[in-house]
Amino acid sequence: MVITTTKPNSLEKFLELPETKPASEFINEKSRQKPMPQGKHSLLQGTLCEAINQVLKFQKIAIAFPELRCTFGGASIVPDISVFRWERIPRDESGQVANRFLTYPDWTIEILSPRQSTNKVLGNILHCLEHGTELGWMLDPEEENVFVISSDRRIQMFKKQQVLPVLNGIELELTATKIFEWLRF
Image 1 (spheres, rainbow, N blue to C red):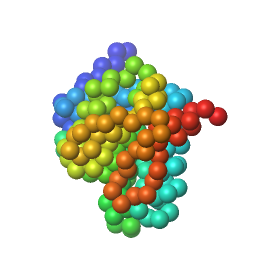
Image 2: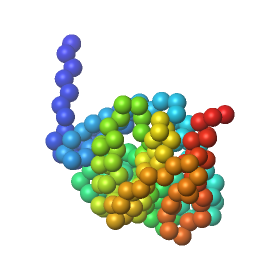
Image 3: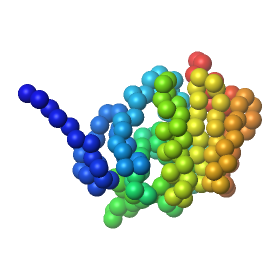
Image 4: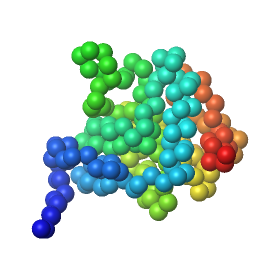
């Protein structure tokens, strides 16, 4: 038996396909599968979501979602972490969190995996910023630095004890050192 697959040529056709593991994304009219997360990536993603949610979720300020599909601006992407301000979290008719997020995150966070294309990751962050996202982070576990991309598309590199910028109005103090120390236990 021969199995053939066709690549979708539109966002609508892409969204009709079954989900893949790891997730596939559709951006710039192309579908591509994200790399399988490895140890450093998984630990940073889980711990960073916990750290953000410990401060923001219980105060009903924002929520960090891991691997959440966000569809907007002609693309469907799955940031490693998507942070939504409380009032922007999509909800269904019953008031519960919606299953489909047809909007951009307020803060998008990506974690580079070995041999992952930096350009593709930055492309996803820039797509978010072009459509309303306030802040993007790209964590590089190998170099132990964090690139921060602001809504004006200014890119800054933070390392060691430099305090990382977060969303306006949020009190959360993180440094590259603190984040990458989570990998040493």
